[in-house]
Image 1 (cartoon, rainbow, N blue to C red):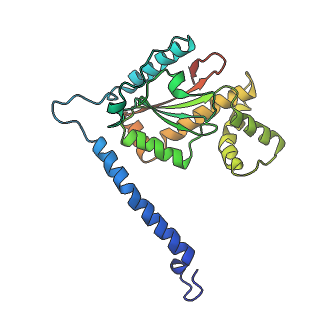
Image 2 (cartoon, helix red, strand yellow):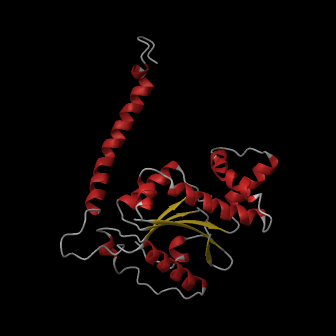
Image 3 (cartoon, rainbow, N blue to C red):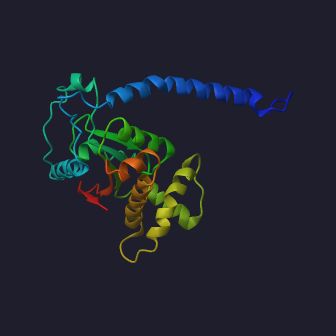
Length: 246
């Protein structure tokens, strides 16, 4: 609040924030304009973009790729080929919301090429505000027909959420916010009569994030309701390399 007139809008800190917000919005204009151009419909007679496929077809490509990966029979690729074309545009067939775990690399576990996957990663593969914006970008401007929430075995973020729930301990820094986003899944997993708490919580967390995305207005929710995209979840087993849909 301004010490002279009492108007909060005259507060130097508020004014500076408003200036920065305005500047950030201006900086996004070229990005949004370029994205809108990339999302324009093809000209009459032009071939559809490579990712103009049904969500079910996109999911099949990912699951077939995972089968190759788990069998240690990935597709051989020349990574230098196609670089020039990829510099002009991207046409991912799926958006992946995955965990930051260094052992889980979506492009490898789904055996896909550069440009095939639009990957968003955060510990615990939870839907955060910033990640939701990225997922919206993939759906709205890149035309990705599929969103996959990918959890994995032995997830450290889920394990930490279980431990803090059981011991009521507090973690340092910004970790409590992450753990709080996972705890509801732990509560639901505790009601399961079979399986381990960790495995159940990992799967339940994936289900919760899928449900959240399906109701995330305005962009993802509308695209899902209009059947333009599909949203599914799966758990990657680090030991076997296999992904199981949940």
